[in-house]
Image (cartoon, rainbow, N blue to C red; front, side, top):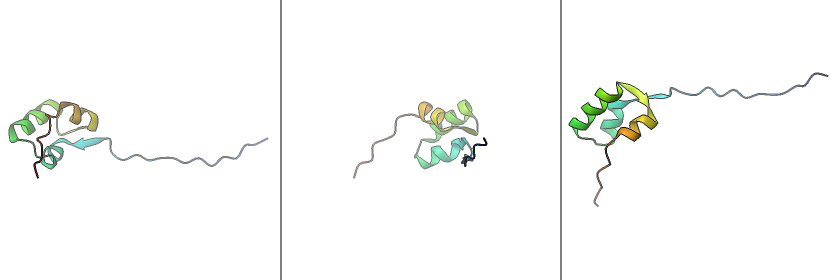
Length: 61
């Protein structure tokens, strides 16, 4: 007896993100951005970027 199944295959996107782009998008100081690039390199997983980022500055309205 042959079992017919339809399987979905997920093709995930790139797991590594651009560190410089993340720093620029989140408004980090240039010193912090250089520190992140030195620590992580040009590309890194998002969880490493977030765990090594300094706390975000509050946005006052």
